[in-house]
Length: 211
Image (cartoon, rainbow, N blue to C red):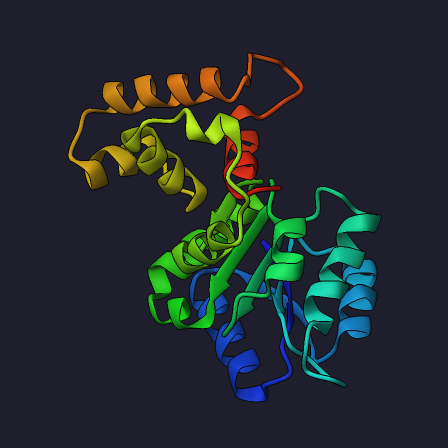
């Protein structure tokens, strides 16, 4: 796997590159601002970009805006956002297939971080639980979600964190069959019928996050 890192902190940038190298992942470029991220993705054609939210010159949302620009040019390009904060304005726009949004404190767990990198590169969605909670706090409650049972909401919240059925079953101390039954109920209540061109699990999460 080949990765581009966009982070203005030299120490964190080099630290991330070292962690990735230890996990067998090659860093093909490191940049410190949004425009350089866009240029590096175009030049190197990496498998994934790891992007800080706040970069020069204003240190507000340049990283996220650059990530959105990359996704506009390549809609399926995998991006893993790292931030000390949850930027609600743009987070909802990014959430979907091949996207991760983690708070930087999660990088302390190296195994989980590398797993998130691989999952996002493979087209998965990995969302930090704190990001989920903050997005939900501003969500306008909608009728379809109101029909979900408490357990179905718990399952859907764990789905939004990128958890597999096995992991959800372990967290809730139920069988995988029970998890599958709850997910079927979620799909039915959110009117997400089977369709070969759609990923119902991702669509359910996007509905849950208010997008």
